[in-house]
Length: 525
Image 1 (tube, rainbow, N blue to C red):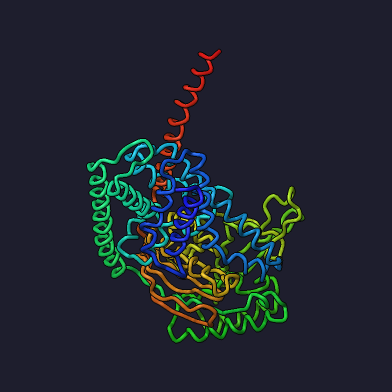
Image 2 (cartoon, rainbow, N blue to C red):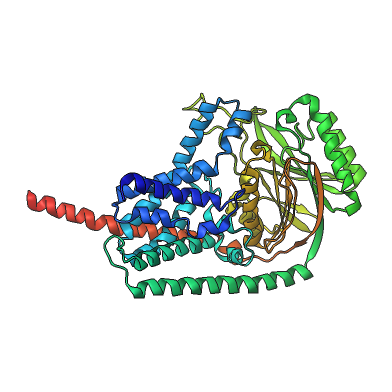
């Protein structure tokens, strides 16, 4: 193939990957989406493979994250050309991970057998790297595409989402190697034997059988735990407050009245806990007296405990520190605890490198820069503990895991997804929450300002989900489990092992090349 055709084929992989995620949600596409990219890499050296992987990544992230443009235009007040430019730059940074994957595969997977190993191991390693480098953005890793496949996702309580990503990547590699064998083509330095092709298929079938068998057994086990567990009735309130007026002081009282009204409407369901979304109170709760008193009037009328999203601040050493917080409030004792968001959104809640890049500002301009709270901090509630995650904290598995390790029996995600409008952003965000429930075997309640709000049980079943851009008050009885899963105890050990294997493979590939160059240089001198 010509270079241009190769690039088009590589870009096809990126588009197919995007099609597997919400809103499109053709999740079966992901099981062969990488095959075009692998085909485009055939016979390429690492540098050319890097470029091909970059093209594929750019096609994927531009189509997956298109919703950033309306966010920046509507709420960052940026012109269209600048919003599109920033999206392209962000997608280019994320595309580097796929480029590195392609380069590592070309360098270290030169034989068909090594290719079969390096595709799943290399893919997981680069997904894991994306979860923490540059503050981390593990948005829609390929394993997340299967959030509706109940039996498949049960392995997440051992391997996390990375286990499913590995299975998907290995499926792609097996299909690719089998296709090459069927068409009698080579991969890099070697022919593909019948034995290798059949062996890879047998291993793949065995992997699926084990995964589905474990899923079936684990679902039955978790169902038994749910049947005998303590329960809590939780109500999530979706106020559907327009982001354009949310922080206007003229609408503060109306906003509180709406949340009070929706909370009161849930009382016939007898909730133990009522959850309001992130920044549901567009003022400093407990500090701004009049609207805070109105909140407490509503709390006393319902006589339930509340979890309320609100900005907060502290004065220390002649300095004011701002936090994005959630208050746990009782009608009897008022404040029972506060969680401060631990993982902040760059350029949304703080400006990184602002000393060197002072011209960059925040999209959220209502307060000064937020500061991070304590990761894993849980709130005591009755004889349980609650783990709260605010907004996109829910896409970081280590935060939910830390809360489960700190004895949280219930996970709550409060968020304001009004920024996304009706794009695929809210659907993508919601899909990832399913894995936090499965990984740690915890029920998860989610309250979103404009949606999607809902409930997920410890098996990953979506018990309820609201529509977008509608007022809602939904109550559900959810189980409170306290089991600590393998994943809760060991975390992302599987992903770290994959990364170690890739690093070792790259070093083993680099060292002989350097030794060979030194010998050539020595003899030539």
